[in-house]
Amino acid sequence: MDPTFEPIIKVEDYTFYYPDSQVPALAGINLTVRPGEFLGLTGPTGAGKTTLALALNGIIPHFQGGRLAGRVTIAGLDTAATPCARLAGVIGSVFQDPEAQLVAETVEDELAFGLENLAVPREEMRARISAALEMVGITDLRHRPLRQLSGGQKQKVAIAAAIALRPRILVLDEPTSELDPRGSLEIVNLLERLNRDYGMTILLIEQKISLLAPRVPRLVCLHQSRIVADAAPRQVLGQEKLVAELGLEVPPVTDLFRLLSRAGVYHGNLPLAVDQGRRELDRLLSHESP
Amino acid sequence: MPARSFLHELNPLTKIAWSLAVITVAFVFQQPLPLLGLWASVLAVALAGKVLKEILPAIRGLLIFAAIFILFQIFLIQEGNTVFTLLPGSGFGRVTDVGLTACTMLALRMLAMTSTIPVLLATTPPKDMIVAFVEKLRVPYVYALMLVTSLRFIPTLQEELGLIIQAQRARACDLESRNIFRRLRAIVPLALPLLLMSVQRARTMAISMETRGFGAGPRTSLRTSTFQTLDLGVIAGCLFLTAALVIIALR
Ligand SMILES: Nc1ncnc2c1ncn2[C@@H]1O[C@H](COP(=O)(O)OP(=O)(O)OP(=O)(O)O)[C@@H](O)[C@H]1O
Ligand SMILES: [Mg+2]
Image 1 (tube, each protein chain N blue to C red):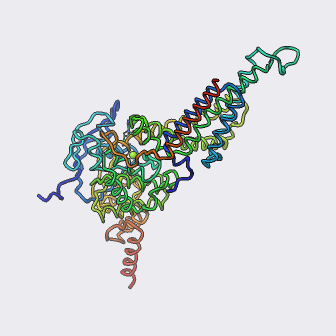
Image 2 (image 1 turned 30 degrees about the horizontal axis):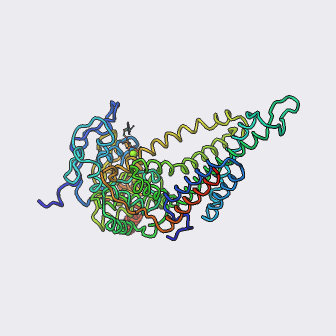
Image 3 (image 1 turned 180 degrees about the vertical axis):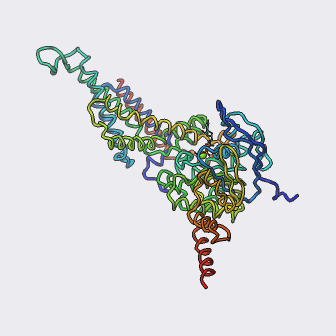
């Protein structure tokens, strides 16, 4: 079998309870991700998104205890049997709070932190730092103190610090939730580029569907600890009941076309972004007019 | 990056050696005048290192602390001749010449000894401090990192406390009150979320470190801690001066 078709993330019947909790934070999760996929993960607050991210990068069960059943396999490694440090070179993580996840004073030191932990020799460290900064497009920030950077720049540093360890997978837990619209857009565009140009497998947890939907080919929805949808964004957002129940923030343009198709005026694919919508509208109007 | 001054260029341990030299000298002198000179020399070093302005707030804090110290101590010393009395005739609040000298001496000693710390912090990136501790003093990395990251959170916490104070002011809470208890009562309700926030933050930081292989075993370091000729010169100078001053003081 071609190794590239082997799943890089495999979650099998996974259930997890935080200590002293009677309600599972994850219940019967099954998820398979192939190398090079760009996966969106969404769902309301408390659905279990962060918990799933922690289960993937080995924080659960190595750092966060609790009761669990089932299995998570990352690039062939069983996370329960593999130390976090070994997983660090396979799966990189970026978190919500741009401030708290950074440990160093300057950008260069932040990128060095993980490499130092993994005992990378000094010369190679320099080369890897340069490469990661280049990939993220922040070479000019190399010697800047972190406290002078904007939230968006800090998130880029966090992404670069994860990339410097050359992981095959990047998991990002709501990396844009504390950024302004422009900063958010820059981050998702960057992720799209990393996925396209470097074939990096990316799992992006995001509540802002309008950022997610036009970019990811596959959207997974978590609700009350379970996966309730796993399909192309168009199909997921077309399910009115699901959208209403989860309170998903559907992009207004998608909503508009959903109304149009319910009224029988529109029959094509639901557009996910404004430019797609405009094209569809043009087509619709040119058909209408005699 | 060019260093801002010779002080910034020195190895952190050299600066710590200088601090220790100042502390030693401060202990052997018993008169206010040499101690004043010593304190002035610390400030002169800060001036030469172009950080005097930066550390002024810290120096002001130390001065206030010294003043409070004098205020508490000065009435307790009863020997010597009366210089003045707070309530004339009653004998209450008597200040003597012996007390005045002793308190000034102690306050100046404290000032000279503690003023080197802000100079040290202002001229040394925390990362260099970690590297020096770990490589040269063999302090375990975890402890060095703990120390330095907790220092790093101070400005963030200050900023947030500032926000809280503003928020309380907007709700017309009496924060300028002379009554310290009333002020505390205004701040405490909002300080709780601040505390919870920092617990959450510490958790995020720990997780972020864990996912980047922290504690995996032997580690390498991007930077090294080096002693240059300048360091050796400064350490030798400190040793020589300290020895000379100790001899003068004890003779
Ligand atoms: N450290 C913890 N200890 C105990 N329970 C927790 C802990 N972290 C999360 N939970 C609980 O687990 C459930 C899932 O939480 P999780 O953080 O995974 O949700 P989420 O989808 O990431 O939500 P959000 O969008 O708010 O980030 C929630 O009910 C939450 O209260
Ligand atoms: Mg979350």
